[in-house]
Amino acid sequence: MLPPTAAQLFDTEPDVDWTVRILGPLEIVHRDGTHLNGPKVRELATLLAMHPCGVPSTELKRMLGKTEESGMSTRISELRKLLGHGDTVAGRTHLPANRSARGYYLEGVRVDSIRLARCLDQARQSDGQDKVNWLVGALELVRGQIGIGELTSFKWAGHLMTTLEASIVEAGVELAGLAAEQDNWTIVDWAANQVRLANPYEQRVIPLQIDARRALGDEVGIRRLHDEALDDVDEFEPDVQAAFHTALARQAR
Image (cartoon, rainbow, N blue to C red; front, top):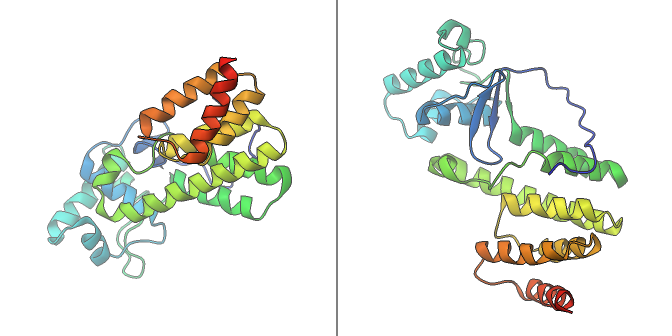
């Protein structure tokens, strides 16, 4: 479901060949639809993309758990080749040679988490409808649960993914609250859905989502929300349980 308000995203990033998406299942995709495969190179590409200032070779080996220089060089070469669609020389456009002061880094590769951070930064500096729009722009990027699947095997990614998840949840809670003040219940419901998509165990937005579906006349949706939420949590928090009890009692009349 698309959000009802278009985000004011002033996209100054140039067109890129590759995009790393971590706000959901990990995807590294070329603009022609090709996906970067192979767990080792995907981890390396994700790490370098998420650290745009560069990673020195010693730090890179530590974060990836590598001890042999030859093994790291092989992995770097393999990634260059894949980024260049089989051409290692072309791949250097995206993964230049190591610079001692900066280390390894990726050029011309977009990362959805960096875009998320920019949207949230703009939201913090805005108010009114502009704030709402920037928060919508941030939450639009969420494709699934944060920090699961392949990403859980990356030891270096744990704290970062936890921080991203918390940022998304807080943004969604804020957006739902702002939209509720405006009686914009469609955005409230959408924001709550995005929060629960990122973290199915988060319950703070559920009472607002109940209010939204009641205001929208979606009584069946309240029952569906109840059943879906119970699939993810063993029991509801007291305020959530009370909100559901009231809503379901009204529905039974």
